[in-house]
Image (cartoon, rainbow, N blue to C red; front, side, top):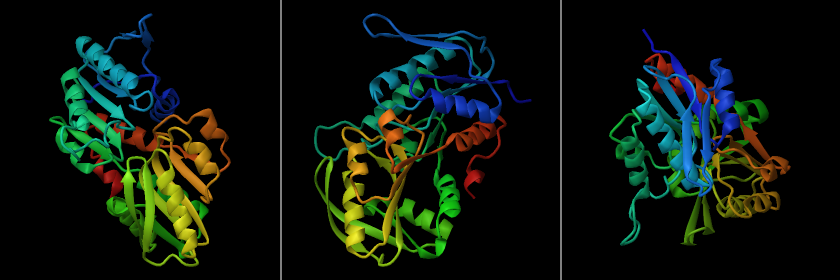
Length: 314
């Protein structure tokens, strides 16, 4: 018999946690996450969780370190409160871009974060569009990596003419992700070949594939500064694309990214709400938010019932 389920939310994305609770028809567990005067984090679980299956919903988005510490302390509080099983639901897994040593004397921060979550007491992790698939191997506990592609495909089919689309990967590293989406909607694939001179800056070099006369959809997992996408949009239009849209899972949108997107040649940027949208992002005329709660909610329900999660993407 399945154990009773509880949902606990940190402060990173309360609106998403509430939407997941509405999907599952389960209210969020009463939980106080607050700061002492010196900004130390204090957590108090205000309901009985003994022997229960608890899902902690917390993205490690900006401010990443605060939200990561909240997650770890919530997990510790639940473990010491005798929760039967604790699942860290991390719609956006921060530090995932630091998944290898690109130069000497640098950390592999994604592995460190995996260790912290495991040692805090999590029994499993559930995340969306992990930046690098190999990070699953950094954990010694089960990790379910959900794909946002079905949500994006549904939105694309409702809004666009599938007969005149080209799916575009903004770099060579994202080809697998873009190809999977292109296959789902039966569209051709193109690739932006770029050379990155330094972190946070990119220079578009060439377009691999034909985009002339088509609507192009750029697909990626993270948009941070927005420079790569804006440069890619310019290059695609220069090669004859009629218009360019972007579907991105995690809208980090740091610094002046929102302003950069508004001034770019992107017709529309569509991001999921794995990261809570800022007021600036909400008011941008060419940025739209795609709800991800039904996907995460269904994965949580299946996990609680010990059913297959991977079959969601068959």
